[in-house]
Length: 172
Image 1 (cartoon, rainbow, N blue to C red):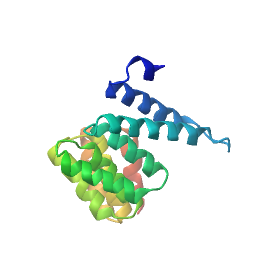
Image 2: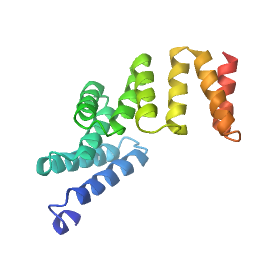
Image 3: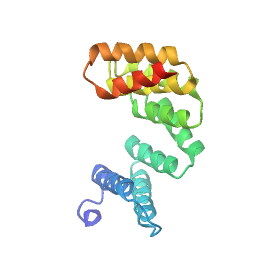
Image 4: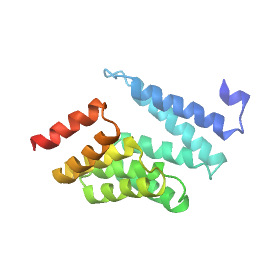
């Protein structure tokens, strides 16, 4: 329906693609393939957006997210890197690249990327700082993870997730 109403509005299509992607992530596929169908639909919408508007960086990020979901991490990383270089004011590709780097056990890169986002775009962002603490933890640098988590607890003393993370660091 939306395709017939607004054929040239890439941001309407982007909204539709994002809805498909979000809905697909919520499906617990029991072998019926519904999740894959929704992801392919979102993938095709992102491609269609890029066909009409090659400068739509959010469609590129959505496309890379779907590739990462299907374990095409090298392709997704390449898109995130290209997005970071061509749009230096976007932090989303850096965060996504850091997430994938953790999955690939490239902890130094993920730590550097999270630090870059914190320094350049989102200083004192709790979510990014928690990602950074997790990267330190996964790397095995429990002292750095503990120190950062304690600093965060000083700012957010009632955050239960931070207390749990500190307990994990102290356990190590």
